[in-house]
Amino acid sequence: MKIKKSDTVLIISGKDKGKKSKVLQVFPEEKRVLVEGVNIRKKHQKPKKSGEKGQIIELPGRISISNIKLICPKCAKAARVGYKIINAQKYRICKKCGQEIA
Image (cartoon, rainbow, N blue to C red; front, side, top):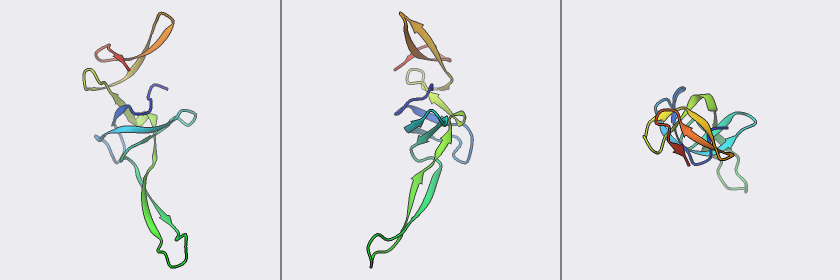
């Protein structure tokens, strides 16, 4: 998978289109990611003890990998990601500027 945890991404479709945020978690087998502050879901939580009140918690939901683009740290533009093999090691590269992505 070309997107990794703590990458900065741009949302390119959906209700949060245009937002820039950080990837919190990656689910490669499902081809989905959890992005901070995007696709917010409301979860109703029951009270745990008697006398306590229930509450509504807002949590980020998973979004498809096809709905995001990586923001290149070098050129600061949203770009596709490719791979380059140098000395038998695989590196991610920005398709716009050609620079290596850490």
